[in-house]
Length: 330
Image (cartoon, rainbow, N blue to C red; front, side, top):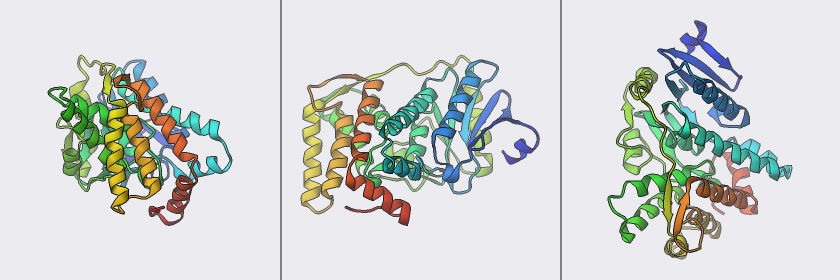
């Protein structure tokens, strides 16, 4: 990307991101923020890139960078902490909505989007990967929805996407199998499970069988570009999906697992609260079983994210992590 930018292939540069022409009608959206975190400016750049390609003349988009350690560390917690301190709750809600909208723009784009993560792809870095048509991962990949460590749940569609993915893989809708798929998503999120390689990310379910792994980092972006070109002819965006939500019964089963973890000394009271918020989204609330849309789940995600952010314990976790780089168990 550095060589391409020096040769005049930069299409847009916001300072926080660059849109670079990879050739053959494929553009690359490159993060350039600190730790490649995703704030308002970077998300605006992403929306602009998607709009530009949507107007025609391009085959598709690669999202990637050449950072040696970090694809994306997710949301900028310092901005979140500052907004909380200022009591800017309306702004926080709008930012959460904007992040969800950007992720869904990736999913609904009328052209193929291939994400190329390498190194750390945490929190929002995982969510952006989950919404792509395909992933071209580097073999060294530390990937996971780690929001529980700071007392939050994934707020950018990660909870929704794991539920949709794992339940869609079922060959039947037997109740026991369906709950197992929900519980699989729950455990990944509630325990902030992180892969130590791309192969493990596939085994955990963050990557699909159709996603590919590059073992040479120097070839990863060109591999991702080729995936876009392979997908572009006759491309159609994914269909709008619904999913069966288990409601109160599913909630009860997951709450029992949380209670058992607390009794065994493996979870604090706030861990249980965060886990319950995760379960609430995955079960479509605590009402009767029903069909829910992607937007229904996104609304629940945002509601629970903001509710947790308003708690003293979550704010303490965020402050501690910003100060030490480590999670606080409170």
